[in-house]
Amino acid sequence: MGKKGSFAKAPFLLDLRREFSHYNASKFSKDVLSGLTVAAVALPLALAFGVSSGLDAASGLITAIIAGLLIGSLSGASFQISGPTGAMAAILAGLAARHGAEGVLIAGMVSGVILLFAAFLRVGALVSYIPSPVITGFTSGIAVIIALGQLDNFFGTTSQGENAILKLLSYGSLGFHPQAATLGYGLLVVGIMIVWPKKWNARFPSSLLGIILALILQMVFDLSVTEVGAIPRTLLSENRLRLDSISLEKILGYASPALGIATLGMVESLLCGASAGKMKGEKLNATRELFAQGLGNFIIPFFGGVPATAAIARTSVAIKSGQQTRLTGIFHSLGLLASMFLLGPFMGRIPLSALAGVLMVTAWRMNEWHAIKKIFRRKIKTSMAQYLVTLVATVIFDLTTAILIGIVFSMVMFVIKSHKISIEVDDVTSDFPPKVANTKVVYIDGSLFFGSQDMITKEVEELVKGDTFRIIFSLRGVPSIDHSSVDEFITIVETCKKNHIDVLFCGVQGGVMSMFRRLEFTNMLGEGAFFSSVVTALESIS
Image 1 (cartoon, rainbow, N blue to C red):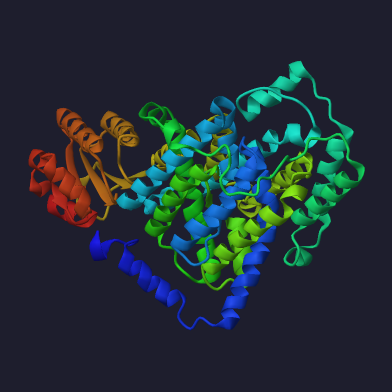
Image 2 (spheres, rainbow, N blue to C red):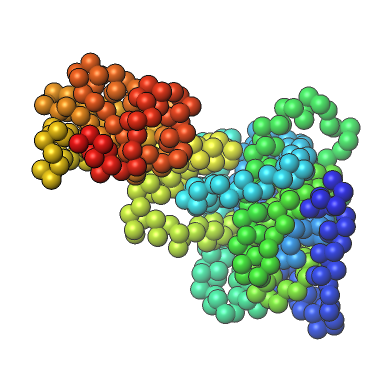
């Protein structure tokens, strides 16, 4: 690696030196204030995402603290705030339902190894090849999963199943019987988050206000609702991953979900970095970010935390709050750590339905509504199909499958769209001598490949039936051609020869001519059958 490693020691230290150049008391105070602001936003989310991941609230809090300290310190940019996220929680919930806490922890550790390997291979740039409607559909699918996964906690009902769809369907046999007190707390938080003015939200997060009010009411009235439970005053959870519980068999068994977790971690972290980087005017080092995410997710399970990614909501709050350096993420973690030790007994009394209310609103807001409106208002059919297919696939299948389906579907749609070529047939005008009579010029526009060449064959078949003596193919508008299309031209030429029809080509671009030569099509016709333009071809005849 040496000097060339983008996350190697020397370049990282140089970037840190630039980041902290001219650092002073004013910048330090801004980092402290922005860090505490992010902590206020992250606290209810960390608790909620811990529960929705299938573990407990403490695991979410531990994840946010360790991720902020470790991943934030090594991040590929100064502004990234990492921790548990709704998208990750939605993926982990199904894993926890099938394999319990151990499955989540081992898969999280393995995902860290995969991310470290991805950093070594420098595959961060691959994220830019995912079409934006696929990402938008994936985000909406995650939002649906989060909302469906919180129905029990929000309404106080009971469901069964390994995923959100099965749990929803189970209400048909188990019944749907909401509990008034539980629903009341959930609606209280949702209402506060909706009506709380945005300008006030920057100073005091609406989610935190809703949680505090629900907590006060619960402590006063002590209603019969499910609470968060005890928050341990330690960063080492009793449910943490231990070395003696790890085996090669388990690692291989959780390889598939770990790949999904790593894929989500890569996509979410790098997209967050790209979006927030525009806000901050700073470019993310994708390779270093993957290294930080990989190392963090490898270590976090040993504390009892769930997999983490960079979080766009918390990152944008940090930037808008005056974030200066990566110390903001560290102060955010210290704020959460202080909350764990000072407020642990109180946080244990928070109704689960209040956290569910936070997640319900978060699920709604995480949809990229501006992008969705643009897709459907402008009736971009391809984008609409990409969005809907990815959304449905995300809800029904796992993350990796959903993204693969979205990308493959996008490629198929591109191929279908590229299939459309323009073919125009013209008669030679009377300005030329009679010798060129009954000559047809076939103008072709568009790339020629296995899905489009048969259109030319159909057009030639009509010309062969008539009184055509000569066909000139104008390929000036053809930028590329594949093997199948060249073979199709060979068949066309053979058909024309049988019917005593001469074939000429003109305006052939360099790439197309190269394919003609490599497949010996030029040898079949002879170099004399190729001209620079239709006019020169006709002049050679006359």
